[in-house]
Length: 80
Image 1 (cartoon, helix red, strand yellow):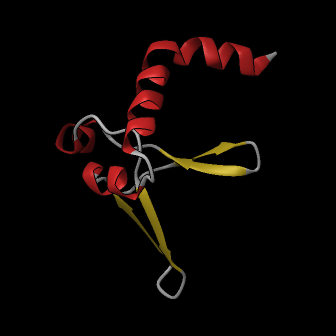
Image 2 (cartoon, one colour):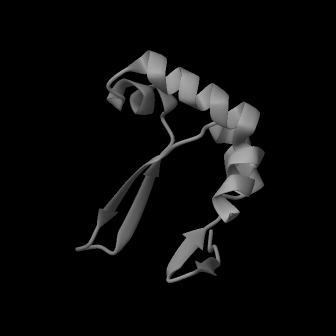
């Protein structure tokens, strides 16, 4: 599948198709690895692996809950 890259400031963003998101499920993070020799980007959506990498799981869960509840308010505050 070919996917268009979107310019965001000085960076490029890659959108994940609806079909892939249906298979991946509800995830907030992904592990990204770049293989420079093959110019290949690997995105790992294994959520348990992401949580296991966090030092304090309780803090992670509280932060996740706060972002879900107040994400829009945080985004508005960030604009000010």
